[in-house]
Length: 471
Ligand code: GLU
Image 1 (cartoon, rainbow, N blue to C red):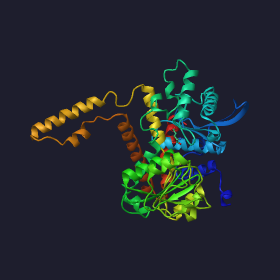
Image 2: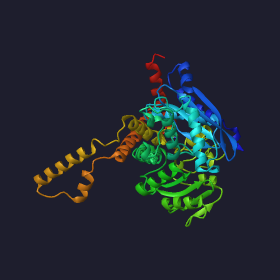
Image 3: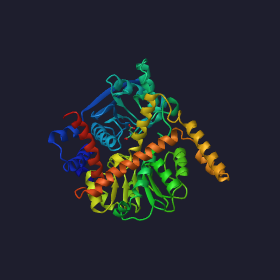
Image 4: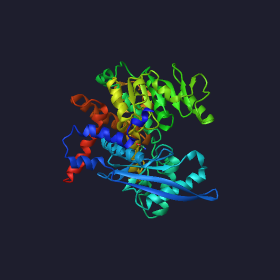
C-alpha cells in the first residue's frame, strides 16, 4: 500500500510547518520552541462496567502555551493515539493564531468506540476521564478549555462541565471550563453549526477573489458548483446544508462509513440526514446511485471537494486521481504533506484546515467570553437598537409622507440577538483571516499555496508573542 511510504500525521504537520518556517527570519531556537509539543499526558483509568473493570487510555496534549488558556477538542475514537493528539494540538495552536482566538493549542482523545457503550456507561467513562484531566488542571477555565471533536458533542461537554462544577463548587467561572455545551447549560447559539458555517463563509470569501477563482481554474460563483462531501457528521452535514440551501451549490456525492451516494442533479441534504438517522448509513437512499467503496468516490469529478471526517484520507495512494479544482479541508489534516505536493502541482487549490475548520474554535471563543461575562450576547442592546430603528423609520415616513413596506420594517426593526451576533462575529473572522492569508499568498513569490501563507501569518503572530516576552 502506498500509504506506508508516508510519514505519520504529526510528521506531516511538521513538514508543512518546516516548509513555511524556512521562509521566515526566525532563530533556530525559536523555530524549535514553536514546533515542539510542550507536553502530552497519557492516562489509563479503570471504570467498573457490566460487572468487570474496563481500562481506557486517554490523552491531553498541550502544544503551545504562548497564550492561555490552551484550547482544543476532545476526540472519542478507536483511531486516537499520541501521534494524532499531538498533531491535532499543533494544528490548534496555528489555527487559533490565524483566526485571532487568544488561545494556545491543545487536544485530547480517548481511545474508545462510543457505539459499543450505553449512554449511562458513556457518562461514567466521560466523567472519569474528565476527573483525571481536572486533577492536573488539564481542564480549567483559565488553563485548558476542551470542546467537542470527532465522537463527542454537546452531551459530553455538559457532563464535563458538570463534573468540573462538582469538583470546584466555589468557582464562579466554572462554566468556562469547556465549550460546545448545550444552550441551557451555558452554551451559545450557533456553536453546533459553527464549523460547517465557517466552511460556508470561507468558500463565500474565496469566491469574492477573482484571482483565486482563476487559480483554481474556475469561474462564476458558488451557484451550481458540484460539491462532493466526505463525512456527513456535524461538520460535513452543516457545510453541505448551507451551501445547498443558501448558495445554490449542488451536493453531487456524499461519502460515509458504509459507502457513498451520488446524484449529479444534487442530493437533498435534509432527506439524506433523516435517512441516515433512521438506518444508520447512506445505503438504500432513494434516488441516488450507491457505491459501496466510498473512498473511490473521492476521485469523482467535481468543482469542490470537502473532506470533513478524518486525517490522511487524501494521500499518496489517491492524490493523482483526485479530480477537483478546489479542496476545502473541513477536517483536520485530511490531505497528507505528500498529497499536498501532488495536488498543488496538478493545479488544485487547497483551502487549508487551520483556516477552513476554524469556525468551531471561533464560536468556542465567543462561548468562553459569554461564560466569563455571565450574560448572553445582545441582552443589553437588542431592544435599544430596535427602539432607535423604529424611531428612524417613523421620522423617515413623516418626512417622505409615505409608509415604509412591512417587509422592510420586519427586517430592519429586529435588533440583533445572540445568534445574529455570533454569525456576524464568525463571518467577520472568516473573511478577515482569509484576506490575511490570501494577501501573503499573492504578494510573495516564494509562497506557493494558501497553506504556506496561512502558516506564515500564524507563525508570525506566535513568534511575535514570544518576542514580546524577550525570548
Ligand atoms: N475540535 C474543534 C477543532 O478541531 C473545535 C475546538 C474548540 O472549539 O476548541 O477545531
